[in-house]
Image (cartoon, rainbow, N blue to C red; front, side, top):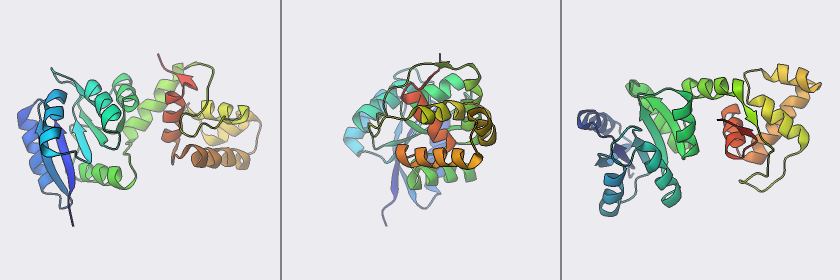
Length: 221
Protein backbone atom coordinates (compact mmCIF):
# COMPACT_ATOMS: atom_id res chain seq x y z
CA UNK A 1 0.00 0.00 0.00
CA UNK A 2 1.50 3.33 -1.10
CA UNK A 3 1.93 6.04 1.49
CA UNK A 4 0.28 9.45 1.37
CA UNK A 5 2.85 12.00 0.25
CA UNK A 6 3.37 15.24 2.20
CA UNK A 7 5.38 18.44 1.94
CA UNK A 8 6.48 20.51 4.93
CA UNK A 9 7.06 24.21 4.23
CA UNK A 10 8.59 26.24 7.07
CA UNK A 11 11.62 28.52 7.22
CA UNK A 12 12.63 27.30 10.69
CA UNK A 13 14.78 24.31 9.86
CA UNK A 14 14.80 22.83 13.35
CA UNK A 15 11.00 22.84 13.54
CA UNK A 16 10.69 21.56 9.97
CA UNK A 17 13.11 18.70 10.56
CA UNK A 18 11.38 17.76 13.80
CA UNK A 19 7.96 17.78 12.16
CA UNK A 20 9.17 15.66 9.25
CA UNK A 21 10.69 13.16 11.65
CA UNK A 22 7.46 13.05 13.67
CA UNK A 23 5.38 12.39 10.56
CA UNK A 24 7.75 9.65 9.45
CA UNK A 25 6.60 7.75 12.52
CA UNK A 26 3.04 7.70 11.16
CA UNK A 27 2.63 4.51 9.13
CA UNK A 28 0.42 5.99 6.40
CA UNK A 29 2.43 9.11 5.52
CA UNK A 30 5.70 10.01 3.83
CA UNK A 31 7.36 13.44 3.68
CA UNK A 32 8.76 13.87 0.16
CA UNK A 33 9.51 17.61 0.30
CA UNK A 34 10.98 19.89 2.98
CA UNK A 35 11.01 23.51 1.81
CA UNK A 36 12.14 26.84 3.27
CA UNK A 37 9.36 28.87 1.62
CA UNK A 38 6.84 28.85 -1.19
CA UNK A 39 9.38 29.49 -3.90
CA UNK A 40 11.51 26.60 -2.69
CA UNK A 41 8.40 24.38 -2.64
CA UNK A 42 7.51 25.23 -6.24
CA UNK A 43 11.03 24.39 -7.35
CA UNK A 44 10.97 21.03 -5.58
CA UNK A 45 7.55 20.09 -6.97
CA UNK A 46 9.13 19.72 -10.39
CA UNK A 47 11.87 17.47 -9.06
CA UNK A 48 10.01 15.36 -6.49
CA UNK A 49 6.38 15.31 -7.59
CA UNK A 50 3.12 16.68 -6.24
CA UNK A 51 2.24 15.81 -2.63
CA UNK A 52 -1.33 15.14 -1.53
CA UNK A 53 -0.97 17.35 1.57
CA UNK A 54 1.12 20.45 2.21
CA UNK A 55 1.82 21.50 5.81
CA UNK A 56 2.37 25.22 5.47
CA UNK A 57 3.68 27.96 7.75
CA UNK A 58 2.36 31.52 7.29
CA UNK A 59 5.26 33.82 8.21
CA UNK A 60 8.11 33.18 5.77
CA UNK A 61 10.46 35.81 4.36
CA UNK A 62 10.23 34.72 0.72
CA UNK A 63 6.79 33.80 -0.70
CA UNK A 64 4.86 33.49 2.54
CA UNK A 65 1.99 31.16 3.40
CA UNK A 66 -0.73 33.36 1.91
CA UNK A 67 1.03 33.63 -1.45
CA UNK A 68 1.93 29.94 -1.44
CA UNK A 69 -1.63 28.83 -0.65
CA UNK A 70 -3.02 31.02 -3.42
CA UNK A 71 -0.47 29.61 -5.89
CA UNK A 72 -1.35 26.04 -4.92
CA UNK A 73 -5.08 26.77 -5.20
CA UNK A 74 -4.54 28.13 -8.70
CA UNK A 75 -2.08 25.53 -9.98
CA UNK A 76 -2.75 22.39 -7.93
CA UNK A 77 -6.28 22.71 -6.47
CA UNK A 78 -6.40 19.04 -5.42
CA UNK A 79 -3.54 19.53 -2.96
CA UNK A 80 -4.88 19.79 0.58
CA UNK A 81 -3.27 22.58 2.63
CA UNK A 82 -2.94 22.33 6.41
CA UNK A 83 -1.73 25.54 8.04
CA UNK A 84 0.66 25.17 10.97
CA UNK A 85 1.03 28.57 12.58
CA UNK A 86 1.73 30.46 15.80
CA UNK A 87 -1.03 32.94 14.91
CA UNK A 88 -4.60 32.42 16.11
CA UNK A 89 -6.19 35.72 15.10
CA UNK A 90 -9.32 35.85 12.97
CA UNK A 91 -7.76 37.67 10.02
CA UNK A 92 -5.00 35.11 9.54
CA UNK A 93 -7.43 32.19 9.78
CA UNK A 94 -9.96 33.68 7.37
CA UNK A 95 -7.31 34.82 4.87
CA UNK A 96 -5.80 31.35 4.78
CA UNK A 97 -9.16 29.63 4.35
CA UNK A 98 -10.06 32.03 1.54
CA UNK A 99 -6.67 31.28 -0.01
CA UNK A 100 -7.52 27.58 -0.10
CA UNK A 101 -6.42 26.09 3.21
CA UNK A 102 -8.41 23.01 4.27
CA UNK A 103 -7.33 23.15 7.90
CA UNK A 104 -5.63 25.40 10.45
CA UNK A 105 -3.81 24.29 13.60
CA UNK A 106 -1.32 25.91 15.98
CA UNK A 107 2.29 24.85 16.17
CA UNK A 108 1.93 23.60 19.71
CA UNK A 109 -0.36 20.86 18.41
CA UNK A 110 0.03 17.45 20.07
CA UNK A 111 1.14 14.41 18.10
CA UNK A 112 -2.26 12.71 18.37
CA UNK A 113 -4.11 15.77 17.08
CA UNK A 114 -1.71 16.16 14.17
CA UNK A 115 -2.35 12.57 13.13
CA UNK A 116 -6.09 13.20 13.51
CA UNK A 117 -5.81 16.33 11.35
CA UNK A 118 -4.01 14.46 8.59
CA UNK A 119 -6.53 11.62 8.72
CA UNK A 120 -9.42 14.08 8.49
CA UNK A 121 -7.84 15.82 5.50
CA UNK A 122 -7.59 12.49 3.70
CA UNK A 123 -11.04 11.16 4.59
CA UNK A 124 -13.15 14.36 4.72
CA UNK A 125 -11.07 16.86 2.77
CA UNK A 126 -10.83 19.30 5.68
CA UNK A 127 -9.97 19.66 9.37
CA UNK A 128 -11.58 22.48 11.32
CA UNK A 129 -10.76 22.65 15.02
CA UNK A 130 -12.77 24.32 17.76
CA UNK A 131 -10.25 27.19 17.44
CA UNK A 132 -11.19 27.81 13.80
CA UNK A 133 -14.91 27.41 14.42
CA UNK A 134 -14.81 29.74 17.40
CA UNK A 135 -12.83 32.44 15.60
CA UNK A 136 -15.09 32.29 12.54
CA UNK A 137 -18.29 32.55 14.54
CA UNK A 138 -16.86 35.28 16.80
CA UNK A 139 -15.85 37.54 13.95
CA UNK A 140 -19.41 37.66 12.66
CA UNK A 141 -20.38 39.92 15.55
CA UNK A 142 -19.43 42.80 13.22
CA UNK A 143 -20.50 41.56 9.82
CA UNK A 144 -21.11 44.00 7.02
CA UNK A 145 -23.64 42.24 4.82
CA UNK A 146 -23.64 42.61 1.07
CA UNK A 147 -26.13 41.58 -1.53
CA UNK A 148 -25.63 37.87 -2.24
CA UNK A 149 -25.10 36.47 -5.67
CA UNK A 150 -25.35 32.96 -6.92
CA UNK A 151 -23.53 29.94 -5.66
CA UNK A 152 -20.21 29.59 -7.46
CA UNK A 153 -20.25 25.91 -6.58
CA UNK A 154 -23.41 24.72 -8.31
CA UNK A 155 -24.76 27.96 -9.88
CA UNK A 156 -28.01 27.53 -7.95
CA UNK A 157 -29.81 30.63 -6.68
CA UNK A 158 -30.68 30.53 -3.01
CA UNK A 159 -34.18 31.49 -1.93
CA UNK A 160 -34.66 34.59 0.25
CA UNK A 161 -35.46 32.36 3.23
CA UNK A 162 -32.31 30.29 2.66
CA UNK A 163 -30.22 33.47 2.48
CA UNK A 164 -31.81 34.77 5.68
CA UNK A 165 -31.08 31.47 7.40
CA UNK A 166 -27.51 31.44 6.09
CA UNK A 167 -26.82 34.95 7.41
CA UNK A 168 -28.15 34.00 10.84
CA UNK A 169 -26.09 30.79 10.79
CA UNK A 170 -23.03 33.05 10.51
CA UNK A 171 -23.60 34.42 14.01
CA UNK A 172 -23.20 32.99 17.48
CA UNK A 173 -26.91 32.22 18.01
CA UNK A 174 -28.21 28.64 18.17
CA UNK A 175 -30.43 26.96 15.61
CA UNK A 176 -33.33 27.27 18.06
CA UNK A 177 -32.74 31.02 18.32
CA UNK A 178 -32.60 31.21 14.51
CA UNK A 179 -36.02 29.54 14.43
CA UNK A 180 -37.35 32.16 16.85
CA UNK A 181 -35.95 35.05 14.80
CA UNK A 182 -37.39 33.64 11.57
CA UNK A 183 -40.71 32.83 13.28
CA UNK A 184 -40.42 29.21 12.17
CA UNK A 185 -40.39 25.88 13.95
CA UNK A 186 -37.10 24.20 14.82
CA UNK A 187 -38.15 21.35 12.51
CA UNK A 188 -38.40 23.78 9.59
CA UNK A 189 -35.00 25.28 10.44
CA UNK A 190 -33.50 21.80 10.54
CA UNK A 191 -34.97 21.34 7.07
CA UNK A 192 -33.30 24.52 5.79
CA UNK A 193 -30.00 23.42 7.29
CA UNK A 194 -30.09 19.91 5.85
CA UNK A 195 -31.22 21.20 2.45
CA UNK A 196 -28.32 23.66 2.33
CA UNK A 197 -25.87 20.98 3.44
CA UNK A 198 -26.92 18.93 0.42
CA UNK A 199 -27.25 21.82 -2.04
CA UNK A 200 -23.89 23.38 -1.15
CA UNK A 201 -22.11 20.06 -0.54
CA UNK A 202 -21.02 20.94 3.01
CA UNK A 203 -21.27 18.92 6.20
CA UNK A 204 -21.22 21.43 9.05
CA UNK A 205 -22.06 24.96 10.18
CA UNK A 206 -18.46 25.91 9.49
CA UNK A 207 -19.03 24.83 5.90
CA UNK A 208 -22.04 27.13 5.68
CA UNK A 209 -19.96 30.02 7.09
CA UNK A 210 -17.18 29.45 4.58
CA UNK A 211 -19.66 29.31 1.71
CA UNK A 212 -21.21 32.60 2.87
CA UNK A 213 -17.78 34.27 3.00
CA UNK A 214 -16.63 33.01 -0.39
CA UNK A 215 -19.87 33.98 -2.12
CA UNK A 216 -20.12 37.41 -0.42
CA UNK A 217 -23.41 36.60 1.26
CA UNK A 218 -21.66 38.09 4.27
CA UNK A 219 -18.64 40.34 4.15
CA UNK A 220 -15.75 40.68 6.58
CA UNK A 221 -13.63 43.80 6.59
